[in-house]
Image 1 (tube, helix red, strand yellow):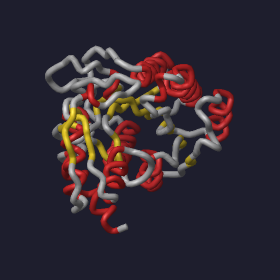
Image 2: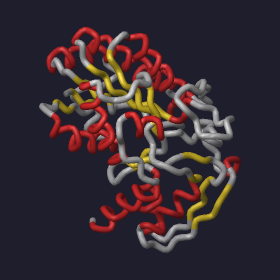
Image 3: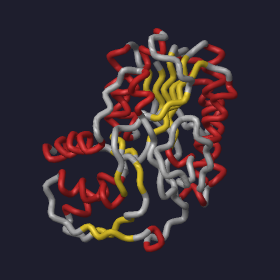
Image 4: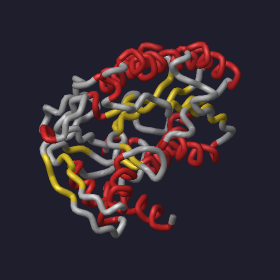
Length: 286
């Protein structure tokens, strides 16, 4: 197996979860920069993997508004190069996408058949990557997820934890709704899915799946839950989107429906609160 983005919050968890499945070649940005298409081809051809798991991405949502070319190259075009190389080898390509491919106009959880309509550069670049993979003709699996956090990297959970521990009051948007998803959940689920795909044991349903825990909340609700889970005392005030200026527009409602993937691949789909408690417990031990 070839894993890209091993030092990212999802990639680090994947490195641990995938290692028991077989020989794993894990690359960081220094070894494989997805903006360098020649490097992609070279690394894949040297590794000759049966499975490629692409956990590398351009994830700076607001910064992407001022760097659309780089975001599109890494998120939109590089996956197509990976797909071409996977097709040459007959390999399976596993790739992660985002709830931000949707505009938030729907009032019920998004299912895999819903038409994407991204509001920002990041969402458009991730949608382009989905389409490039589909056009690449390789065996592939696209896993859309949302609001990813974990004990490593740079994410909402760690930002809230740091500021709460410093005694800061937080002002957090309370009119955007989604599903917080831990990087450990994504990694464990991927490690369960890959053998299913290789054996063909999963129920039919295409190459695109929504992979999230159960439930939903707002960013403010998530922040308050983080503070409580860590046993901290911090004020968390609810604000409207308009009160928190950001370069990129976000969907007001981007809840993904994950029951189909959980059923097809026989996955555990815990509540998002249970995954937060797991992550917080690890932080309290640090």
